[in-house]
Length: 302
Ligand SMILES: C[S@@+](CC[C@H](N)C(=O)[O-])C[C@H]1O[C@@H](n2cnc3c(N)ncnc32)[C@H](O)[C@@H]1O
Image (tube, rainbow, N blue to C red; front, side, top):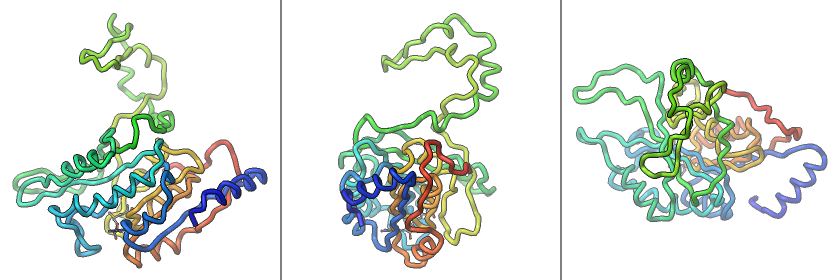
């Protein structure tokens, strides 16, 4: 199934005929075991939301917060192996509250993954715009989750232009009266080597986004209690991959990552341990899709 040589020969034949083959490989089983069959340096992006510690144990079995790191490390070891050196791993996770305190397993996991060889490059915040109202005695409602970005090396593929956003009102106010400093390059005061020249952004329509993503959760009829919105994998697939690349979701649930990847003409691999979830995704997805080869992506934007 993962024959790289055969895959390359097929790709050439399809390219000559003006077609592109997009593959979606779905697997039923434990990610820890299934990952062993995937070749090293195979994936361009790993995007996933694993079961949170003890969070939804009524539906698909929880892992105790104290055991979480030990449970996850053998899986992240395999993810490190199957990711290409130019690739990125994005982990959607959020620690829960245990006995009135935020649990520290995510922080411990980051430290252990660094020891395992991962670089912790960035942290994105997913602000859930439509978080439901509620009242708790000692905290407010939780309306954000982490998206931890890990890499194998400092240089990785990142297509920043793909996620630019409209400049918005900031331009009207901030760029109206530029100071002398704004017109020159303002070097970093902490010696990071990064500087900024505000005047560079005058007369531009689009700017690079921040690392806070404002996206609503989806409560559509997905038959899965923890599905993330399609806009979430879509944003990261645009940022870190190109057409024909390979995206992996080792905890695929209702298959959101794979569905979006296929629509965006990326090959993908999905792994799910619960047969009903696996069957439901398999039913709605073709394992191979032939698309006409065009230079511009024609995928629908959510
Ligand atoms: C948070 S959900 C993922 C939801 C998914 N992002 C979506 O949009 O539907 C995590 C999924 O991982 C599955 N899972 C739990 N342990 C697993 C394991 N060891 N290997 C593979 N899948 C597992 C669960 O059954 C669940 O469907």
